[in-house]
Image (cartoon, rainbow, N blue to C red; front, side, top):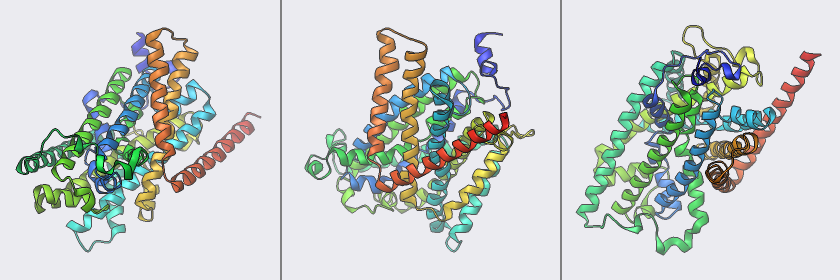
Length: 452
């Protein structure tokens, strides 16, 4: 057996192949795009364009930089450890299993909450199309659909993701075309620094204001990292997942920056007039009329479904990785359905937990997600340094750039964004880590008693 085949069989890491290895590069990329949902650009447009006084594109540039360096670090780690578990496995194997548990626990806050955020956003659009249906019933129906799709197997899930992502991309491209048309009608210059930097308002916003916007917009990128959770279902995972990470991150960043740049040029004073909650609806009405504004409701529901499907799948596989290693009760979390080859217990549990979305606040949930994500991203960057520079003793100029300089830049940007999260996000995030610490100590105690 070749070295590559050995890695793909998971024997090198002491595991059996339990999940179906059926996904190629296009399917893995589309999974990542579906998770981050290109139409999420509309979810926070009114809020961030207003808070940055029209400099949302600049906030996206900063967020893209942070995610790009982190994507490179993820790529390095998935080549070293092409197994399910993502951040949990990288930190466990490079530093210490206990630190890995806490890293996995931190990013679970992201993966558990994101489906809920999607249900909350979708339930805000459904009443516009179908008035009279209670919000709680909307959420239960959406949760049931997403859970069933995840239970029937990764191939079916991938098919739904592909359909949903194509519809979203078509809508975003159409919105961009309408923006270009408006720019032409008003004889605005399509090449204008004003689409990125508002000199007249910089004194009122400053770098901290733009960075604060970027710390929220990182949520729009949460998805490029989710492809690492498919490492045991992807063909040739080291190469496939590694390439998908960079492709998804750069394509998403480019789409977000270009779109918001053009939207700002098409409506220069829009940031003063947009409602923080319904800004995207107003934007589409301004650019293309009522039909596109109404169609946005349909597309946003589709986008939320696609993202919820992918995020539930990713969370289930992180829990599977932790359960398989007995960091969580193995009998439950390490279980794989014999028929569909998916971690069915985890999928069902996440679906039940998602019912809490009926009571979760959108703004707080969003910042809590970024607490876990940015902390996890920082630890992935550190893992690259520990694995390649410290343990494998890679040296030379190229190694310094790949294994010290670039991860350091990624870690510093992520920490800076993390520090700019709201007070309540930090308080609740640290409380979540405290619960994780208690869970870890309980697991260690259980293992100790079992060995006696």
